[in-house]
Length: 262
Image 1 (cartoon, one colour):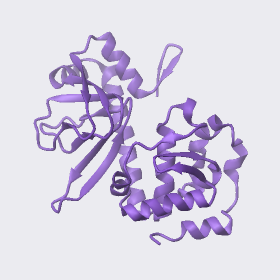
Image 2: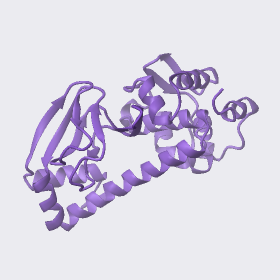
Image 3: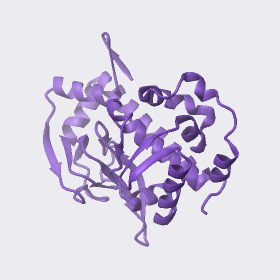
């Protein structure tokens, strides 16, 4: 977060405003679903900021499998690693709009403007933190915990004014499975378990609504840090702050959490 005068901005908002003030060398680009923004190994000549839609960032393993690093949505920046070549692939999942900056302008601005440089470092720090959390999820969490964590992620990324309603899942089950290190069948099974337990409503495969925030946070394996979900929960007007100090999960929820892949 950054503070400019009386206004507090998210890092991506600060960078956007800075680029507008500095007359950035940029253009608007649009991408169709499954169209690549850039490919691993290509010369890294551009930096991207997503303004609408969802982009999947991934690498292809030698056997053809995908290792998905992140899902980029509105406000996210891509290709900020300052390497000569892109180190991963970026592909549109939905219709995507992006501001595309020429790398020479971006590099010059990074060198010449300390505020801009701090904003970029803050964004890189946020991205690194998210990558570390994903590593913990893949290495230590059960299938239920991973799926619940993903639902929390979707809710955090959704605009505040729609969190009380149904949120559209833009990713396919295969995309989610590759991101979570699970199979397609396991992801579908975990989502239906969450629905059966009354934690979410899932009227269609591509949309959901959270019904029980405290239990979702605990099923995500983050009961001790559930307070970070408080802004989302309060926006839903369903959860009081004291709800995040709830005790152990009821037996039926604990059983679901402890079964990794069944």
